[in-house]
Length: 398
Image: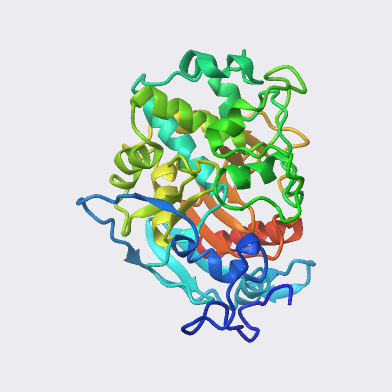
């Protein structure tokens, strides 16, 4: 069994006591196991709380529309409905906020309003926003070099790179983001971050990093001059997080709590997975509820909402567009740890592998959150069909 859709019979993964089907430790994030694990990360990995605090909870008004039968195209371009596309693309939760009110909300695959769901690389945008908040107060400066904050990296590929280049993923550091190769740099990141053990049968003489900082110190090569080209590399976000921690004397989970999560009116505390040194995995270890991801999106859509500096949001929407950014965003750009959809709308996207998405549309005042557990790390037809469906939703709600 490769995986199962919501309309298929649900296998008893981790069901019963003792569980009937126990997920294999090395495959916890792969199909079909990710259909369970992405909603139960705290039962699999060590985590640290991102506290919501004692403050207000942002309540949503409801102006709901039944969009189940909205005509959209499926992943092969054939006519279907929104409900059909959500089933086809292994959706766990889907939420549309229009003008600050809930317009459409659906939960699948056992997910509920209180379930924390792994966001994968949506965590990069969360980290990038907190960096922007700190930059607005002068605690970090994107124009300065990485080594001004982390002098230990003078012997690595980040020597001479600015923090803005790290934010935009335009440093020249060699890092292979080959998800299916356990010996690639991203495979080593899985080990360093505590997500995976050494691959079975691996060379006993192969040196595996024991935590994220050790992995970063071992990345000594560059492939091009800094600033020359965008290349998506998850490790850049972890460098940012270490800069933030060094500059403030606080850990990442504490920073996200104080600067963001306590201010957006979150319903639930979130969490990060942590490595063996207690470092929160900034590039992909963040977990939160469907509605709280929407609250995060609304803080961005409202030009910062008094939380994020408006000039940081404006700069984030002003990227260098061109070919080579993403097969699913042919006119896209990448800026400050966010994707930009195209140069006309300048709408922002947070994206994570296996189908995680937050969409912020300025002209329509819409936030859409889609949490998924795809069988594949990346899937261009799934992404393209989802974005087209979002635009159909915007038109239907206009």
